[in-house]
Structures are given as structure tokens and as C-alpha cells.
Image (cartoon, rainbow, N blue to C red):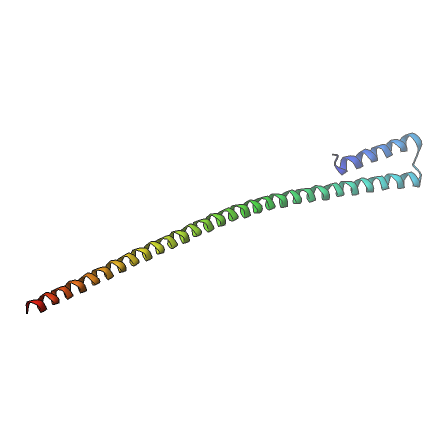
Amino acid sequence: RHSPVSTDAKLQSLLDSINLNHGAPDASMQLRVDESVKFRTEVQQLCWVLSNAQTARDAEAGRRAVAEGEVLRLQEALRDLTRLHNEQQDDKRRTELELQRALSLMQQSLNKALGLQEAVTASEGDKRFLQD
């Protein structure tokens, strides 16, 4: 890309050359040269604006990619935590069931022991009754 100064200088040089070879340019030629310089300046400004817009768009795309990566990382962490929580809940339910089974077996054993104790006590009472 050419800088506006060098382009303008080239146009001025061309204009000076025309002045030397053909005399002073008429007003319409000067107007066309001025419009050409103005148009070239506007095009260069638009190119600069477009370049800045592209840079901003690229930066935004970069930020978006980082944010999307962070969202994916957090979603995966949430899935892991949910899985861990579910496993802990399953372990807790299994433990509660095992404790309930153990308590039930202990209650059954206690009932049997109490039944045996009553039978022994009754048997001892019968023996004493028979002995008396």
C-alpha cells in the first residue's frame, strides 16, 4: 500500500509535469486531480477502518473461543461433580440398606434370645414346681 503523502506527491509531480509540457491545466483538470486525491484518501481511510474492524472481529472471535472453551471446561466439571454426587448417594443408600439388614438380623437374634430365655425361665420354673 502506498502512503497518502507519496501518492499525493506523485499526483502533484504529474500535475507539475503537465504544467511544464502543456501550460497551466484548466480548472476541470485541476478539479479531477483534486477529486482523485480526495477519492484516494477516502479509499485509504476505508481500508484503515476495515482493517481495524477485522482486527476487532478477530479479537472478539478469540475472546469468544476462550469463553467457549471455559464453558466446555465448566460443563465437564459439572458433569464430573454430578456423577460423583450420584455415586455418593448410591453408596449412602447401599450403606443404609446394609445397616437396616444388620439391624433386622440383630432384632431377630434378640427376639430368638428372648424367646430362649423365656423358655429356659419357664423350664426352670417347671423344674422347681415339680421339685416342690
